[in-house]
Image 1 (cartoon, helix red, strand yellow):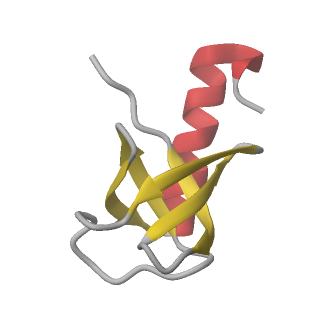
Image 2 (tube, rainbow, N blue to C red; image 1 turned 120 degrees about the vertical axis):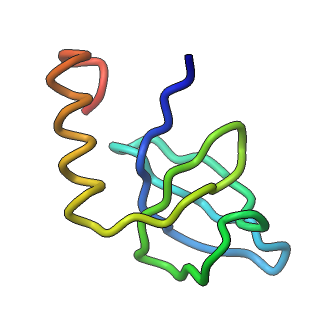
Image 3 (spheres, rainbow, N blue to C red; image 1 turned 180 degrees about the vertical axis):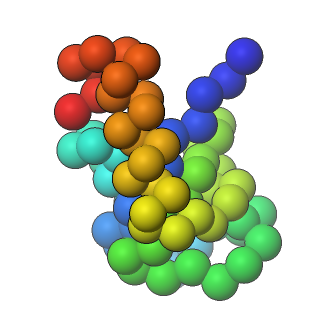
Length: 76
């Protein structure tokens, strides 16, 4: 089973790679398969180095809060 976390796009480079912040930890993800336009400030669900779905901020925050409740202090 895989768990994908919502993250906020901090920057996007010329190679379509985004720097995404997930609860204070930053990851690089490829935007090539997300399927819709994204920009800095948007939230995406990513898996295995690829952004796979854009989500609205409220959904992202709700999902992160649920994960915090399930995992305790593992997610900040």
